[in-house]
Image (cartoon, rainbow, N blue to C red; front, side, top):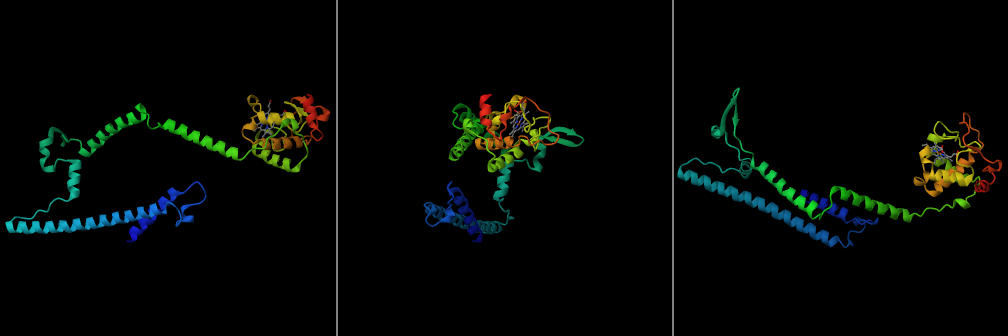
Length: 307
Ligand code: HEC
């Protein structure tokens, strides 16, 4: 009975797991009032009845077998012959599955080939093997029709594509539910806003230091971001555009694809805040000299707009 209770608990747990809605409320939050409860209870009762019927049938069958055995024994005794028990269902089944030739009849299938005393027997393939083989042939026909002729079910590749499409939809849904701040570059103005620069520094450390160095001094890959010389123009508008769109063929990734607009803004502010910090061993200047009033500490927007 303990086993049955255990099985029942497992079954209920499985059902409950299936019944879970995408909402955070689960079956177990309020099992009594859950609309699915009557179905589960009925299923559980049917399952218990099924188990009981099964147990009783097995017990009856065993009792029945014992009775038959006793009758046969008595019969054999009355007839004066030795009682030979009937083969068990298991040995009948394995014999049916294997249909092997008994050792006593081996000479019937001896092919007469003997190699160093090892003889070759003309054994047939066991029926279980042949059935398996035939069923694979039957399955191949079903498969061909279902997957390639009627196309009722998707092939693995299509299945994958469908899942990707669903994931893409889900992604769009999530993105739509978290609207991004829209950054208008033309209206962007640099201020030494410690909060924004702090966030930008974090973005810089996570994404930019491998090519521009921690202090922005530049390395063999990326240029110095602290000096007065710019490859792609100084001022907030140019720097924002450079970071956002990148110069992929020159080795500067387009960060607008990986970062949110506000993250690009934050890191742009941080880059501008690095101006004139003169880190040691900074990379030699590259590009054009920024106009003196292009210092981001004042108003970089006008300068960049004027260029
Ligand atoms: C894979 C290396 C790499 C990474 C990572 C990288 N950059 Fe760059 N970056 C470059 C290269 C190379 C250039 C120069 C492109 C050129 O020669 O036109 C550059 C140029 C720039 C420029 C223009 C400099 C100028 O002189 O005009 C800015 C601004 C800049 N990067 C900012 C960033 C920021 C911000 C990040 C992080 C979000 C970043 N970079 C990450 C390689 C990188």
